[in-house]
Image (cartoon, rainbow, N blue to C red; front, side, top):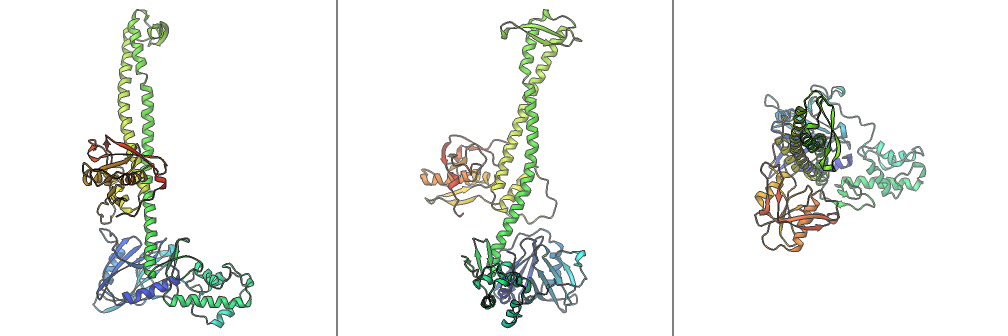
Amino acid sequence: MPLDGLTIHVLVNELKPLLKNGRVLKIYQPEEATITMQLRVPGTTYTLLISADPVYPRLHLVEDQLPNPQTPPSFCMLLRKYLEPSRLLSIEQRGFDRVVRLRFEALDELGRPAELSLIFEVMSRQSNLYLVDAKDVIIDALKRSPGRDILPGRAYQAPPDQGKLEPTALEAGAFLDELRLLPVQTKVWRWLADSFQGLSTTAAQEVLHRAGLPPEATRGELAEADWYLVQQAWQNLLEEIASGGTPRYYPALDDFTAYTLTGQAGEPYPSVNSLVAQVLMERQRTKELTEAKGTLRRRVAQHLKRLSKKEAIHQLALQQAERAALLRHQGELLTAYFHLIPPGAEKVQVPDYLQGGQLVTIELDPRLSPSANVQRIFKRYHKAKASQKHSEELLAGVLEEKQYLESVLLQIEQADSLAILQDTEGELRRLGYLEAKTAKAKTRPAPSGPDRYVSPDGFTVLVGRNNQQNDELTFKLASPNHLWLHARGTPGSHVAILAEGAIPEETLRFAAQLAAYYSAQRRSPKAEVDYTLRKYVRKPKGAKPGFVHYERAKTIVVDPTKFTPPPKH
């Protein structure tokens, strides 16, 4: 769920004591809509992440700094200019709204103390981050919008509160009066969500759950006694929030809250900060991974479509070249029965010794002499023969290239991290399938290494997740006498058991399951996996990344549909 006002309220109260009076050390902008800020307090340095992502806007601490662009974006440079160094005075929420203000004490151009604020609006697609001065004049915004008057030099306009009250604004008697006077057809949860700041649908319906009433109950369906139950449940929810909340993730709902959901089994978290960081960061990574997969998948599919057209052209050329044998036979017949060819004839019938002397008709060019017609037939034969050889060579190249791209496509589909996709993207750029990057790029992360598992018998098993990892695993990490595995006759990962000598049956089957699972046979209940010593695996000269030949292999059959890889090591 997006961060609702109640969750933000607890989150801000958690961050206040941690970050207050923190000294701003460094500001980064790792993503287009995300900044991180290093804040130093005595004995500790915290990294605060603020993201105005249109899908997953969020505010929380992170343990590791995210990869950053080689050249900082302009908004990042602006923040550095005004807020490095500065001191965080406070973190405040506007009532229970999804608006957070971070107040800083900085120095102006003359070295005098000046107060600046970062205002973070958590508004889904309209989420934004503003740097404003002490008079709330916009210095700049992460997302400028002339139509909404979001420009440097303009006065900051807070989002309208839509007439909603702070949840603590109504005393018990006033709350009951408002509820009693509602139109009978009004849904109670809708009244709560529309009347009070910070309530999501989930929070408003939770009040009805706590009151023991149906979540869709209308005012007309409530008895007088129910009014008091709703008021008590409302007060109970507010008290839970005021006391620090009860952060939980609910797997069945794939949702999280800063308060308990009645009747739902939730996984407790030590803080709302850790809950928001883990859940929303993971969702953000999943979104980025999905988008990156889609981009690469489309580019590879375009090349596969091009190769399919080439394959069809070469197949057609081969079909036409198959006439070479017929042309040679016709030339031989004309040579044998040269004396039967009359000058100026358009065709001639001669006995075919391959068909028991049956007469066959051979087309001629009446403008040519008999000898020239024979030469013409043999010339067409040699041309068809050469064309056949050329087409076979081209077709073999096309099929090899298709095999490579299909293996890349499989790696893209099975990738579970951006690092794997970044390696694959770099490989495609090096090979010319993608244009060279000219845009400002992030600092290049170190190449990802093969996945590492431990078998039931305690042996280390490596799994390559892209061509770069496959080559590294096979020719750098595995020794000649280590056991090497690959799904038979299909694109898939290289797998190696880092042990020499006899391999226990359970370890062999475990490694084979990994090889089948990370291959095109993942959904096959009977997947064949070849295994051999690594010394019998070789890379042909000039072969594309990940492509190998192997020999002296044995085959094991496994069922990857019933296999789930264990945690990596």
